View 1 (cartoon, rainbow, N blue to C red):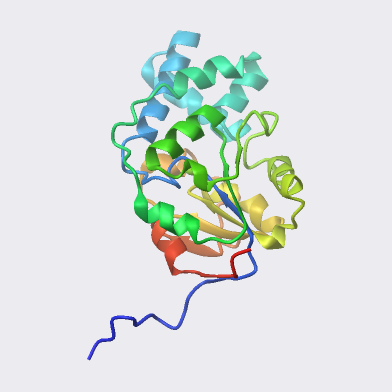
View 2 (view 1 turned 180 degrees about the vertical axis):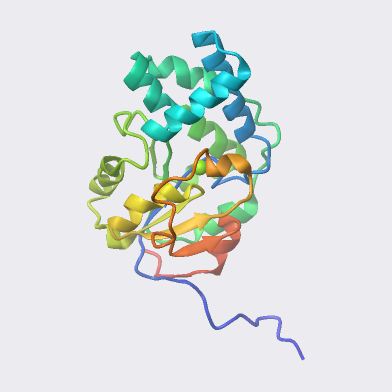
Length: 238
Ligand SMILES: [Mg+2]
């Protein structure tokens, strides 16, 4: 006889966590939904127009900047003194028609005790647009974007320290959810519990393998953030 309330004995233990940090792109929404390829395409088109490159060269240059500077934007700012606002406005000009309200995610976020933030290398406006379309914007009490990080993108450890500083929290009390494994390296080093949102979309792996692409900094693997959040054990609501 099956018990409708049956649950496996093992539930990931997050009772120590009251600061919840979520990457945005390909973490809060499914990497296969068609949003991120538009951003990727816009970055490539920006490079083509800016430097007069054909598509293949723009693609190669984008990967080079990503490899050497962590993000395309960081590379453009370092090498070309690029105005970040101009770049971000261009790349985040995307169609969000494929994103819908995600009640499952909203419920999952609502049950988490403590503080919840979006921690993204994108812009605040982009984060607000996406989160609003998913119907979860008011579940977050802060958005840490690339501007608030003083244009130091993840995985720069200073960006993570700034987020913890904002909350006056030690890393041990925080959990971080992210689709790019390399961005979990500093999180784990600061004591955070890490969750890699795994997907097989090629852009999630973002170019050449990084020397820090091992597994030690990945504490949990989840296919989708909402289902994982529903599965974990949390502390009492504050
Ligand atoms: Mg991401």
